[in-house]
Amino acid sequence: MTFEETLARILRKGTPATSREFLDQVQDQDGRVPFIFERMAERPEVLVSHLLYKGAVTETSTIDPKYVELISMAVGAALQCSHCVEYHMQAALKKGATREEILEVILIAGLLANSVVLAEAYRVMDADPDLQNIDLVTIGCPHASLSEIRHVAEYLEGKTLATRLWVTTAEISRRRADELGLVQVIEAAGGEVVADTCAVVAPMQMLGVRTMATNAGKMACYAPMHSGVRMRFGDLEQCLDAAITGTWRGSNHE
Image (tube, rainbow, N blue to C red; front, top):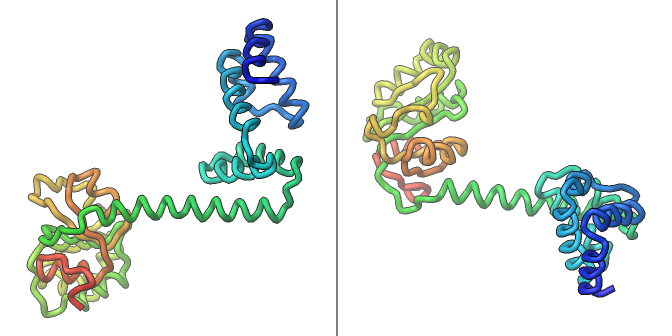
């Protein structure tokens, strides 16, 4: 039946009857009716329009039906739609897909989904590659551990900072770092060890902070949106170097 003949048949039968007929066809073909089709059927025009579009794409496709289902399953996996994955996995099996093919498709979908996450996050973190002058360096998001505080203190011992440095940590960690003399070393260099808070929630504009550097991916993503600052992201030593010099040199200072 051509597309035009299908449209003419719908006009003769009406959308409610056509909607019921489409659901019966899906049940016969796949052994079940997807939940979204059941809800769409409450408004027959919506279901009929959706299935007409779906049919026009799949029925004119040059791709083997098994691979259409495998592709649909991969997209469902990448979109984290478990019901989509389940439905298209069963359809793919009925069309001849093997367990090995399904596992491979899931692995490929995972690779692509992971690449999207990494690409978006890294673009946020490196959104200002020309930024050099740093107003504030912040370490600890989530809170810095005692070993990180020790590393900061060892790096800064005997040095003087050119810009502000905040090391945020839990109160219990700050007390222990104070007992070990680590807080005193950081403060002697010009830094601060702050307990039970986060630079993301600080009023950066009121504090005159326009640019920041951090070793925390969470901070690098959130602070530009929440605080309106420009951001550089790097490892701990790159950030501490920025605190000492007041400028971001990244790995080029080595």
